[in-house]
Image 1 (cartoon, rainbow, N blue to C red):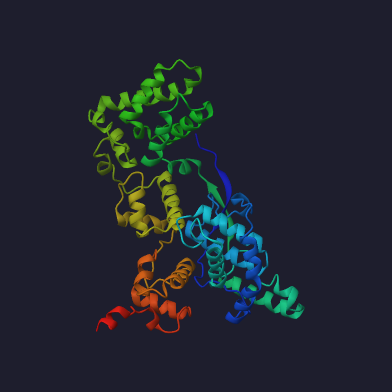
Image 2: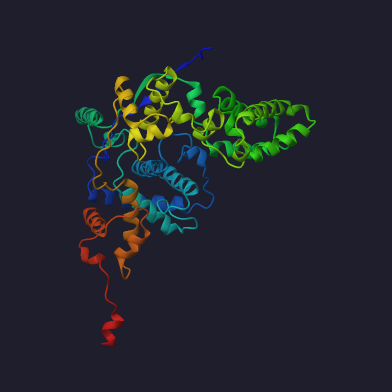
Length: 435
């Protein structure tokens, strides 16, 4: 029976320009003047003892977003910076503290237990950092009210349109949602271990929790035909307890256990080694070999591709383009095929037949400093510029390790010090006095 599919809207990713868009018409002198005007108000808000912080309302972090954690940190700092510029000082302080609750281990938002002056210093560093503009922010929202007339606004709008052409454009396109392909993403040992760990507590779980766990495992083992993934000794021990249970709400669990045990019995009749396989959690390839024979992958090599295998190639190509792992596309696809019976040349030929353009990675060049790295370098320079060996302390504290020369060049480029001599190891005065 052919499964019905859904048509869903998906975001189409395009290449993003790495150059961040900075706020216009703001010189360092303007920033200093603006900060001197706003800092007293910020300090008053910081010193409020009962300032209520609601992380849910501030939303520094979205757990279901596809944006990486590091990029969400940078986006949060951008929002703090814009809130200060727009004179929403209380909101800026709340967002800073909410971000610190989410990421207490990082130095970007300060560490727990800061005093008022240290917290104000963190806000100044974020305010002064060149972080670009948050997504969807109208850069001239405040300035147009104070300094620009209608003619300048029209010019700014034209510049923004030109900038948008060079930056990332998010497009929505329709895609066929293959539910079974979605379920197959959960057919991994780590996911199954988590589910079975929850299943061990079936007596204490709610009926809904047990139902949810069994439905997911049923989708994987029955719908996707990966029943051998559940051939595991610890799981069978749980099944024993389920069979002994007299609770009527555990009927669904019993039915699932019976299904797996029957499958195991069928496989055990033709594969005596399956009893040893009970000791290990299995990948898809091993699960397939348990049921079909350990030489099945080699014996079943064929030049013909079924419709399901072609769909799998499409799915793996799309998944690769979303995640962009370190390996090249063909190697990654060959490792993630359910039946790993295809040579590299065979996969390349089929991709060309399906008009799938193979993604070729560009040669690695010196990576540009990210916004998060720039913020951390700025904070570390402020902290260690007066120490005995500034550059050594800065390099030791950096999350992303880079060559010493590149770090010094970046510090000079940012204007954090006037001369590279300020970063060198300082001679001890005690040594000179002894001589």
